Image 1 (cartoon, rainbow, N blue to C red):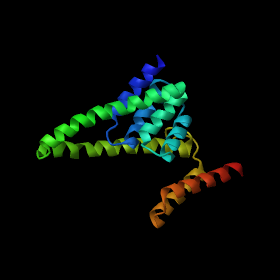
Image 2: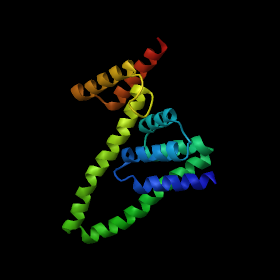
Image 3: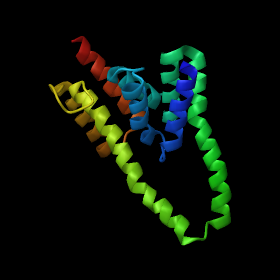
Image 4: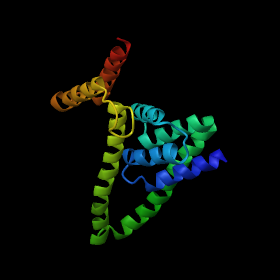
Length: 183
């Protein structure tokens, strides 16, 4: 039964996460935390962090990690398959349609209309993760962790000012967070 729930949940995520892995984050959060209760917000935040750090698409990494948490390796395989299946079907159909009708203005208008919705989904996921990092909850309520806010501002400044490799900045903030947590 759990495998069917994982397959159906991640099939829906794969079907409706238009715009890539970041657009899938609020959908994964809704399925894994709100609907099924498979994860806590803290474990979801940890999975999203690991998904961003590991090679490969974020949504697929997240599906794999959630599947492992819920039902071990078979759960990871089922969740990953569920996440990839809708995209495979849709891309095959869209490729056929696009190559056949790519000159039509209606096709270009649909693509332009999807952009704002994708930005809103990514912003929602980003704000939830930021609230978790700053306040320890998925909303901006409660005490603010000043150390995390300072690390965020420093990392953002470094990324914008010197355009360092984001992986190096993530490693640096991880080490700084470790040091702050130990001290």
